[in-house]
Length: 260
Length: 300
Image (tube, rainbow over all chains, first blue to last red):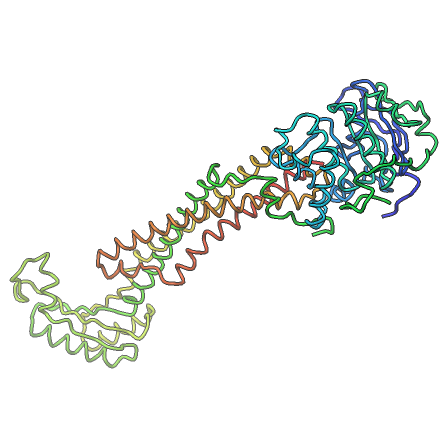
């Protein structure tokens, strides 16, 4: 596999249409660079979730080209998808936790699917749950967790394998401002220490303002605006992490995704 | 298995897809089908043994009949026929059936006190051959007898037993057809169950896919669940089937009939019967694998 270090995602005139309806995404052409941190904004129905679905390989576009990690995703054989999905971390808007397994097992799942040895899984999951303040809820089933707790489990699951690309759909929608800031710091640490490219879809203007000089991708009626020219010029590769302890500051489980 | 196709730990698989054990219909359906297969297979094997025993007992024998009204002449002709048969290389042994024995055999129909003079009874010679004789060899024996004692009649017992053998063979084919039908029904039941389980756990499957799970990993999770349920059903079904076969065998043995006694199962037959639940589980496993693989292929 040949990987071009200059880009991690490249969309070329991508469009998505459901049936005979109007396109929900039109003419999307952009590049995401390794180690960058983006916010994806736009009104409800602008196409944020559809764009994220394309990025986390749950959907193929109706037209256009998509390259990720140096490979053409349009012609990628189905059997090769798992290898690429393991490079991604996804925080779904509706969490998508598996209901009949514990919070601990939900967080451990990406590592177990990747074949990480169980002692390393245990340590990494305990550390991660501790960091998102859920150590005492590790054995709880998702249905017994509050919305905010479920969201933190979903985030822990998304970042546990140190993905190359983290996609988060409204990741702070159900948590208080203090926890929202803490989760943002977690994403920053992942971005800075592991080199993960982060895309956070959010309505939360206050959250965006927490970042100095944020790179914003704005969707409007299925088309992409570039208010910060984030997509036009390669941004600085990584940000400096805020001081303090985070799950990525020491040697952790390490999935198969991190670049650093 | 590719390098990203790590097997899922059994405990983890159990958590991801809890098995219903005997709560769902599948173990019970498989149990009923397995019981039917065990009974049909044991019946087919027993019929095969019955036919083999009958052939071994009867197919190497012929009966010579001498019809003569005069008892004195009949006895002389029987002696002459026996002498002619004894010189034949195919004949191992022979016995002129005593008249008292023949009268005893006819008593149920003719009543007691019926002597050779009241009702002319043909003389009979039981002849044991070294092997099952062909039609031409029987004809050769008849020619030799005709030269010595004209008017005798050879009755090859395998000839009049042929309809019985044919009926037994038909029953064996019936048992085989029943087994084939039940195997198809088992595969169908597992196919439906696997599709239903897949539909019930579609959300879990999608999440595992999006987290980088491979089709093989997901298929193995479902296979494990199906294996447990099918094994439980197969064991229960086989136990019920064996119990029924044992009871039927016990009842037939109590009849004390020599021919029915030949229908018992041998050790190798019991090995075949024991292999049936194993074959059932393998069939269920294969069906589940194909069903889940096809369902996964329809997803991205």
